[in-house]
Image (cartoon, rainbow, N blue to C red; front, side, top):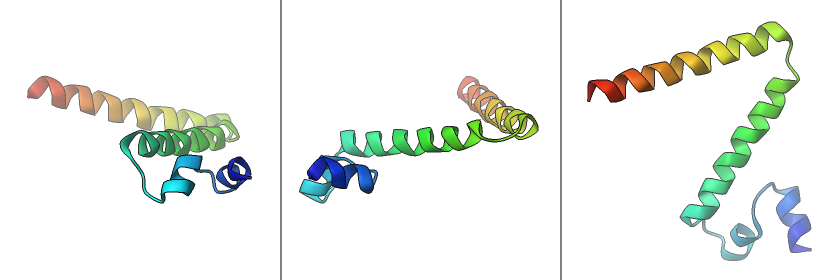
Amino acid sequence: MLQRLSAAFDTTTDYIMKGAEDDSVASQLKVKELLKQFRQVELMNADDKNLIKTLIDAFLTKRQVQQLAQ
């Protein structure tokens, strides 16, 4: 029953039982959120996918430049 609830609410059984997130649970939830977003992107047309890829590449490049400047 607990597993069904966690699947229905897209969370972990730990979160349902404890009511609070520890670091590992929070990390798992963030990864799930990203996976959901990528699944939605997979359904988009090629132009939209390319735009999203370009935005991600630009963000990653910006982060690399910022790290080099530190």
